[in-house]
Length: 37
Image 1: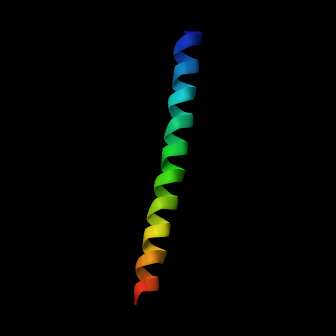
Image 2: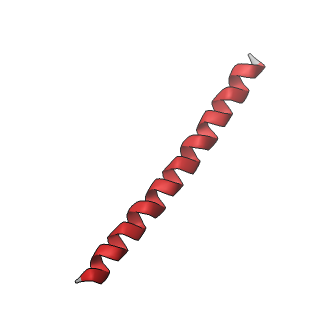
């Protein structure tokens, strides 16, 4: 049970990290595209 909870916490942590990186990447791309015009 404890291992499953720990694993779930790790997955949640990775999902948050991936979401932040994805948001940053998309934001940077949008800013870069707007800078072109």
